[in-house]
Length: 104
Figure 1 (tube, rainbow, N blue to C red):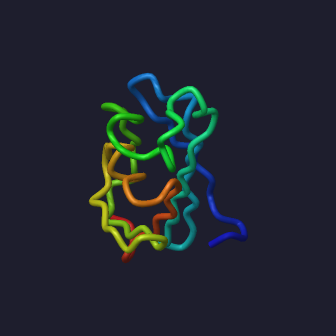
Figure 2 (cartoon, one colour):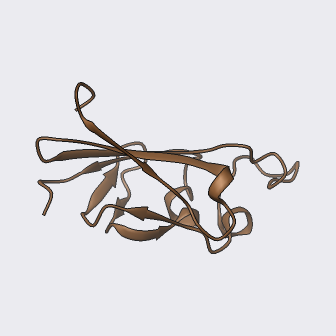
């Protein structure tokens, strides 16, 4: 998956475009999506442990590919399509999603 895969950048919306770096790698029906916050120092307060939750991410969404994926860092499943960043980053400050089967 990491060698020769097609790279697709993913862009957040609702004013958080500059605060998230995300991309999908696709190869032979397999897919991985990586999501990480960036430039978020102004979004958090000193009491925040990580840039998580709706208070930080608001209504912003990330357009995931339309397949069910599992975050291999937390075990959470995501359906795909426009997904709230607050959901993706609710338990851990980054997400690493792997599709559970072949692409449609």
